[in-house]
Image (tube, helix red, strand yellow):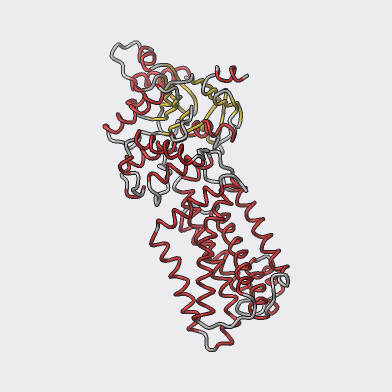
Length: 243
Length: 252
């Protein structure tokens, strides 16, 4: 464990807790979104099929957005420069952010899962704790992707442009709305490099077919690999714009 | 070996250069800063002061030449020897003044809670922010943020302080207060390198260099620089202009 990562994680958590409005939005926005999505489904069977995909997608979307914007602020307000001049390593910063945001992303994902299951009434077969473990891996990848992507944005406007570029194609190509096999072959290849494809596939297997974590080992391994690769990439390019 | 290191100047820059693409920000610059003094980097905007400070702090690596801090080549190992105050306030606006200072104290290795608490309190009292310690940074005035930013740089009691335009935007009263802190710190043995473009700051420095286009055009104590103009009533501003004209003549 990088030695200063926990200090940075603690600071990230303290910062968010003191920002009450953001805290309220973190809880409220997924509830409103899931409520609207749930109410729009014509019948239960469609909800059951879509629910795992929505849970995976919203976790990816919110975690990516929250981390990306926060990290961009770290850069634009000059605190990243100050950190880079201190004894902390780049890995400290990435792991610290990962831990810090993980807590909030996990809280958000818990709200989404419980709301989908207990309020909207989506049926599921797998075990709840296994759904959570799988979700945490999706979140970890989204947080490191958010840090990495924020390196290429100079302001919030630019960061917001990355959402249609990075998140939207995944929604359309990850097999949420129609099977991946029905898309043109080159898009099927593209879907294979998208983490959401594995997130949706794995979560559907757990929630709809009652699979366990070993059964979705391949999807889990791909998502862990994605997190490791984006962590390394984020740490490598971290100094961009910090000096 | 340790004795040899402690006898060396606080900062040694030898023929260092750095450029942002085609722009030469620091151009074959050499200087030495003795320990325990306040040393000014004076010059107009774009003279290379901030780039030089970033080279000293290790945020940038020189394209050529070498830099030594307290006898050691700049690296992550020298980071704890330096207190760095960037030009921006560079604080976490949601956190309180005390939480900001405490965070940087931890980052710089003050792991003992009691010791850290005492040092955070000491430094916040020094910059007269103890009564406002619980206020969020976003609710503080510009001058107060400058003071908290300075406290973050000072909290681990580094032997070398690199302060990038620390007095910019301060009212005259606060500027005097800042110079009181700086004098106290050099009195305690710290070395301060302060960049500025105001001659008021220059007059407070024990020693300084005038910079222009990434190079040092003159150096010495404020009195030495004024005397070089050979005018009895010369100000530091006159001295700066004198050295600029001298340089232009030599180039012509």
